[in-house]
Image 1 (cartoon, rainbow, N blue to C red):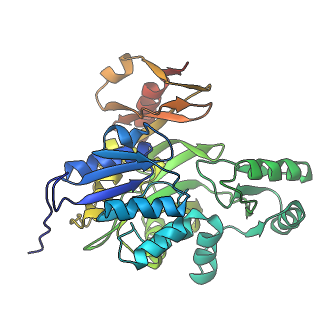
Image 2 (image 1 turned 90 degrees about the vertical axis):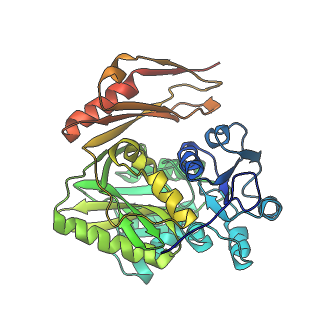
Length: 397
């Protein structure tokens, strides 16, 4: 019989998790980890981030400052360092891991997936898995050559960004220079490197939530989703994949996640085009499209991540309770101290729920909450989730 022992939060021998990034995904993870008895320290670059509002302890640092990250880790001496965002000093995480600290899933995985170039080269060139055609560029001249090489239409993204920032689709030569400017403006830090991807005429875009844990690898039912401006708007389960296609997705995903190693939940994005499956992107942590699992599964992606981080067992199969969906609540203006006006009528319907993230500021297009719906069919669940989300008005000072 396998056992795992740990103490009480804020006391000796507590299982202490240092959460690096404290947005809405981190908030749900913190809640699940605390339900399992962990002590959570939530850190981000700004005060009053969502996860800070529920954690045992919180702090504000520049997470891209390697010395600040090191000082924090050495002072806390956590049992697990759990990155929730990409903008972290990953070279420092690699050093800390080499010194014996436990980075989830691994420091290498965090480093590779922080930069689209690294993970694309590993997947396409080292593992030989199918992806769209691609090229990289770091100035306008090489960008023009990359676009010519890949061809129109193509998708341009900064190699380092998140939530669709800097992403655009180019259809003709007139789009090239604006696309370059858009990518640079959306790039994180000082990076001017971009990826140009051939446009895949896909039938379905899915996220395969995959959790590596002490007993092996477990897959959630695939999540289908829609995007706008490179960011997710709706997601739902089941995705309705042909069983043979699903097995191909699982095989590809297992190969990638085994290469990255470690324990934790991975969100692997894939394109399905006929009988072909293409790798798109990967996050070594809970995925925004996976918020649907808060209503669709008895163990959400956050609960699964928490179990894996703490070394607890996970079932071999994750069952879907019922067709379910999520729809985002977006801000349409800028401001601080947001307030919410909620139409309560949609929430009278059984199988509906609402999550307000509690972000201290907003800007046009920022994700502020999510509506959830569960029903007998995917379309009914999507309608329920939309009705909840559309019933929320966000305003600010």
